[in-house]
Image 1 (cartoon, rainbow over the protein chains, first blue to last red):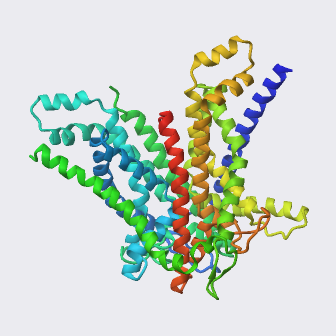
Image 2: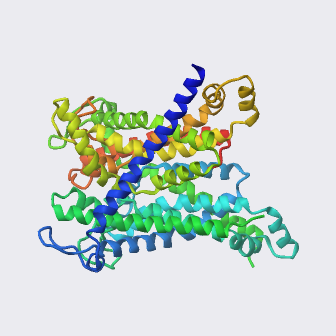
Image 3: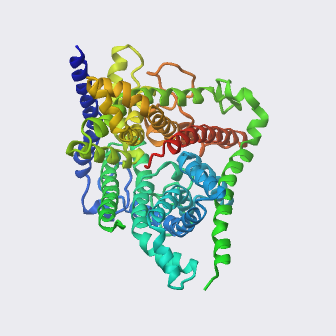
Length: 275
Length: 289
């Protein structure tokens, strides 16, 4: 009886574990099956067409996502590394501990709330939607990821490294910039890649900021489309061939995110500083 | 080269930045929801009508919808995430299989929610519709249950990643003592592993609960967007986040916008509390994630 219970429980655990990855495999399978049919060269290099017409592509969304990623990293990478250094320097003090909690809070804010905040801060002031407001919204999601990886990578580096730099006569700030940062840069980079993968798929904060745009746009003061936003609008539309576009777009997005995560994993192994 | 004193001072501005950023987020939401708080007060939370045309707003259907969706999704996901954590860190610890499952769980965490929504709308909704037809309910397909199902898949990684770490922390000698008494593996898990790791596992569930509350896109796509109060999980409803996603850009009147911002503020406060407790427990257990 005892042994039987043990066996049943183990089988139950294995069964549940297997079933919980089934949806994942199923999602992959459907995205590949449905997405691959709508992907061709035209899909990447042309603009969307009205629902009735055949053809058209997602160039506007690809350009939009690239713009958003570029400008949000311009904002959040330097700021994030700076704030990461701050948390590292003050890690034994009350203020550092408190700010650490605040960063956790920032990371936990639902992305739709961030969308509203940026709407109130920027869109309302500018009186129209813009790519730059979308970039700011994504930065608020990107920032905590960079801050955390920066701080954690710094903490992994032994203090003796800084001490030896100080012993050579370098000032403390100089040793941080010339010794600590180069050592940590690989870890930070992999964090940035993971963050890219995360914000590339964010839709909710873009609804009220970048807004979406069916035309090609390079102006950051005008609204732009993005891959996840395009998937959302196309999915909610009643048109059959827009649904197909949404599947194709999902395949592109998911491959993009996988490549980013794969590089980060792969590099992380190669770059990991061992002491 | 800048001296140490100036360096410290420059770095210290980071603290001002972080505190300022969080405070300004908080006060932006608070000040902009002031008109609504003034007009409706606490009755806002128990009023069940939502009528933008006549300016009568109540949050009850959405607060309830949010709680219902996330609780149901949490209940569905508990056996699966618990099994996955046991599988990875107890039964097949450090073996080939557990590595594969760990990778799967990580992949699950990086899929964008809009893709989950797309998949759920075309594959989960028809399944739910069949159930609804069998129960002779209106066959909408989109409902609280559909949203909970897709959410339960999405939140598995959060509970699993915490659960597997705390289960790994259970000392070997405690488990071996259990085995030496002739206990089966199941008994050891129930009597030794769970009591030792329970607060960490609980924190993992809280984290995924907080995640489920704030999730927007996948829920918006499959919950059906109905603004009426309902307790039936087969009916369409709305959560706070899906309501905001649907109505924020369509709101014209100031009071309507303010009400939506107040809902965002409520959402912010709820997730803040849930995440705070979860993080507190995790930090106390010194789990490295």
